[in-house]
Amino acid sequence: MGELILGRRMFDDWQMVPNFDKGVAQGTNNNGIFLLQNPFTLDFAVLKRFQILGRRDVHAAEHEIEMLDRIDHPNVTRMLDWFINTKEDSGGVLLEFCDKRSLADLIVQCHGKFIEEDFLWHIFETLADVVCYFHNGPAGLLQAPDPQEFPRIAHHDLKPENILLSSRNQDGSLYEGKYPRVVVADLGVAMEYTSIPQFITHEEENPFASDIFQLGFVMYCLSHPEEEHSPMGHFPPETMKNAGARLTKYKQMYREGGGERYSTSLNHIMKKCLRLDPKKRPLAHELLRKIRQARQTPVANYEAPSFSCFV
Image 1 (spheres, helix red, strand yellow):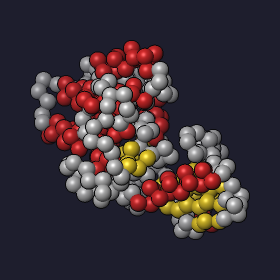
Image 2 (tube, rainbow, N blue to C red; image 1 turned 60 degrees about the horizontal axis):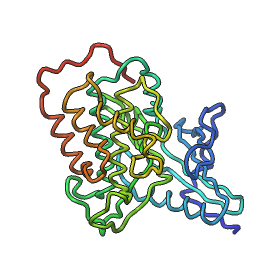
Image 3 (cartoon, rainbow, N blue to C red; image 1 turned 45 degrees about the vertical axis):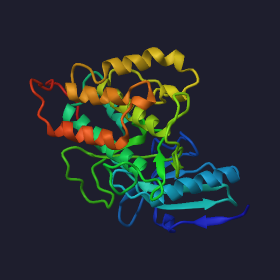
Image 4 (cartoon, rainbow, N blue to C red; image 1 turned 90 degrees about the vertical axis):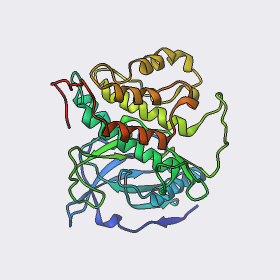
């Protein structure tokens, strides 16, 4: 091999921050997550190192870099720089740093409490907007997709660990919303589709319906922070060879939704995402429309519980 491919050549401006607790390889094509700091601006960034063991890994790294470079959405992690060095079997991407950690950390923080509904709606709408962007492209987010103009993306790995929170915008300015900015990260297993069959049988995997299920799973985890969730729990039943062993849990998630602590409208939309039959789950643009309509409609006779957890 012996090939050196550089991105924007910004890496010399950054230094490793010692004792950062994420330097363990996790996930696909991941050889460690490290925190960096620019000694001149004092800004932080995250370095995700690729595992480069052969040509296949190089292609996987290039694919992730190309997607990150093309994606332009305020709630998808922004890539600052990248490099691939096949001579030294190394590579990585430099990503924006999200200072409020992840939804998985929020769930641990809220164990035994609950997360207020308005915050859940904020997360739900943001994630639906990102998934709609992935599935439909940047134009006409509430319309049916046109894959010829923008390759449709299925994330495949939406889970609390891969959804971050930040007090900053992508450009580093202060995020002025009531709640932290929600950021979808880790496109390591994301796939692009320039065409998709008009009809997919029940036995075949529908990657877009799978993303909708995973979005519902994230919301279920947030609304039940007291529960222990399986590391494989975000995989929908149609993608699991042993789905029968988890069928009871899938049915429980669909039956409970967010639970009695939350409004009927939130529960109703969440359950649509968790339907076992992928053909009965809403499309991304339909889901986003339903969430926005529900947020604009006053909920009668609903009072949020008084003891809540907020990041």
